[in-house]
Length: 101
Image 1 (tube, helix red, strand yellow):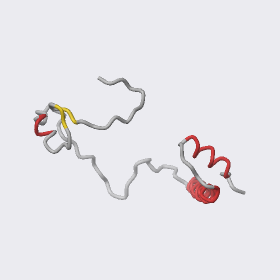
Image 2 (tube, rainbow, N blue to C red; image 1 turned 90 degrees about the vertical axis):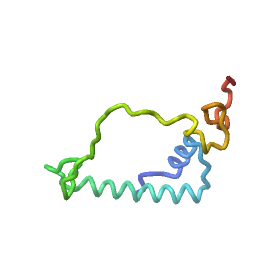
Image 3 (cartoon, rainbow, N blue to C red; image 1 turned 30 degrees about the vertical axis):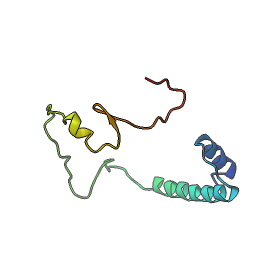
Image 4 (tube, one colour; image 1 turned 45 degrees about the vertical axis):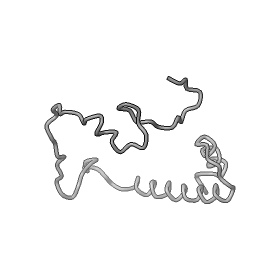
């Protein structure tokens, strides 16, 4: 019995503002079912005594001192920008309804 229905896929697609055909929704429902089946299989594994981030070999996180360093020169930072004003990058407006300025 499928865990994910075509209607659920369409609902989530609508929330994500995606347009899916019925065939795509069916395929997505099948794929999601396979993922959930695999997750259920993993739930059956005995992980007692295994640390969440265990590795086969000991790994250490490389650390560096947390100290202030001089910033990059603004003129150098925008040197390859396609368009700039003073020391700022010029980018296209992507949010409608925002006021200029």
